[in-house]
Length: 304
Image 1 (cartoon, rainbow, N blue to C red):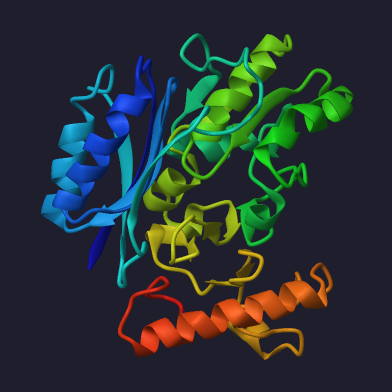
Image 2: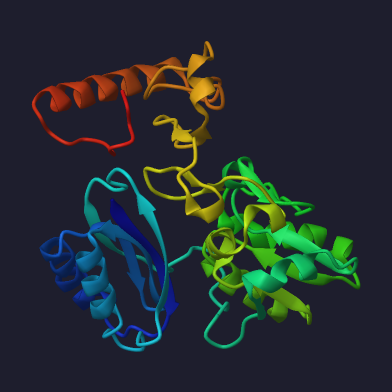
């Protein structure tokens, strides 16, 4: 079993560039795989490894400047969720494209998972899913509004175009682990919205803490690793990835006529040209050749 830890923390890093190589080396020494993003505004990512390895790297991260109270959410995976370790430098640890947004200054009211159902059932509360459309497509909360955004960068524009719908409403927002809501709630506060709430720990914390019979969550939650989705109790879901468009699909979708592994699925078949498909064919051929040489080229969950 592999321990999976999702984490983020907003703090001030004066020199992220100097942190990259030592953090990469530390993760590799501990057998940690996954992705960590570091920027001047903080750190974000998901990592996996053994129990001892994950505990050790979390202890190391909490020694970074301003990170002593860094929180994380844990789940498990039966196969390796990541093929390698990457520590990346970014301008933002979650990209909203709003330079004045500062979650360290002010965010909305945190709502514990145990109190979430009561809040979102109130008639004066509008519930907004801040995730991207392909994430919302496999699961969301009952009655939640889907902005149908392709990217988190699109959220401010969507809000500007739709804000009149929410006159005299309290706004409750949620995302996978909580990081997007740190920025989206700060953004709404800057727009003059006073009653803004967000689910503390995100969907992952809710699915971990709330028993399915009491849950208002429908479907699965998309996760950014080879498991693709998790459900109640953070159990691995049934979704797989289309390795052409990186969207989630169900096993039955592989039987559709549009599906070809690594080349297309029913969601992207008509979005790509024949030249694209030829290129994907060649990529898939190289993947199969590398496997025959005994090289690890893709996630453990990629069954073809």
